[in-house]
Image 1 (cartoon, rainbow, N blue to C red):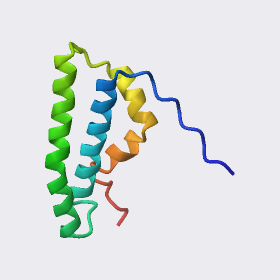
Image 2: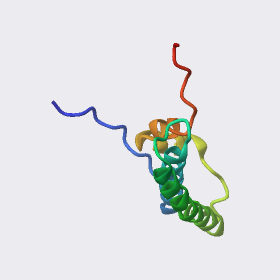
Image 3: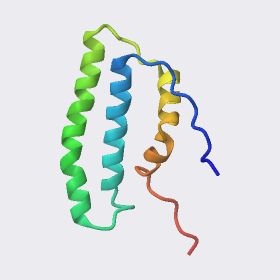
Image 4: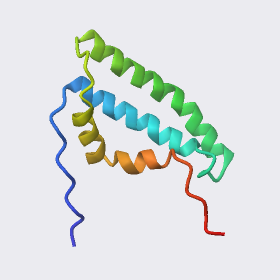
Length: 102
């Protein structure tokens, strides 16, 4: 059985694609740091160390967009790209999990 087909990625400029990739990398690191979901300090420490470089890359991607005259963030299109790249699940790791039933 084949996995379900993912929605197609919308057409993005190279700078927008870089922005989305860097944003998701930051989300992944913050999700690994989340104290409500973590299991060990070493993993959180490594994620926090990586977060700094990923945040700098995100800043650089946004600066490049601005320098190229891409002044608008097309939220609907970028949201479609995030969904196609599993952004909802990845962003969910940043949130505090719901209370248990006990």
